[in-house]
Image 1 (spheres, helix red, strand yellow):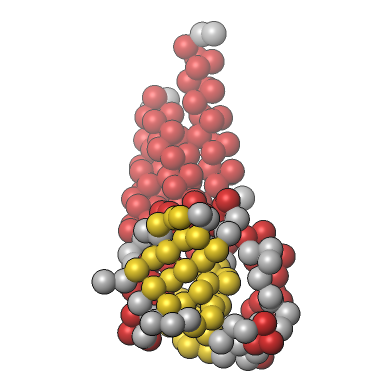
Image 2 (tube, rainbow, N blue to C red; image 1 turned 120 degrees about the vertical axis):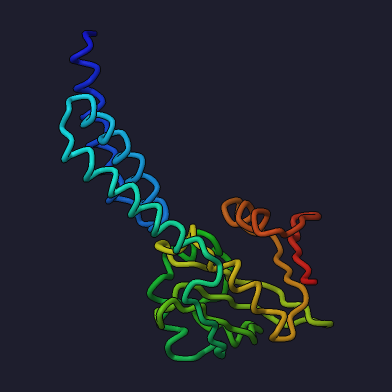
Length: 206
């Protein structure tokens, strides 16, 4: 493989990664992958001495970094709305994301949560748009048993969980408990500081 072929390959690789980034449902992943593609393409542009293209891609890298910082701030434009199981909008949210929710919470009672003993519901909103949902049942001594702890795909890599858990103590919740989560959600719980014993995951506040 000649040097010219290698250089051309670098250009194609950068372009391909930038295009792939727009297929990402997660905003954070989109920004990360797009930034990587822009960096590769900027290097290619410098090699072929296309300086306007290089400058444009370095600007894209800076834009991606700026928005990544905003996206990962735990207090960014979030608000917590307390609802009631069975609320019309909450049911609409559950129905709209039902297929995706079932991937992570296959046993959760989504159709009639109130009739299944769920008595606690919180929506996390970003600029008034619901991006996260917590459904649970209150137990003794400030314990909340979790049935659904869901974030929409666009915000799944963001700080919805960190914000939510930071707000719960003010609502009289001192401990979160979840039993037998799916493998995908178990990994998330561990990353959020839950401890596991016999497939029961627990997080204590304070």
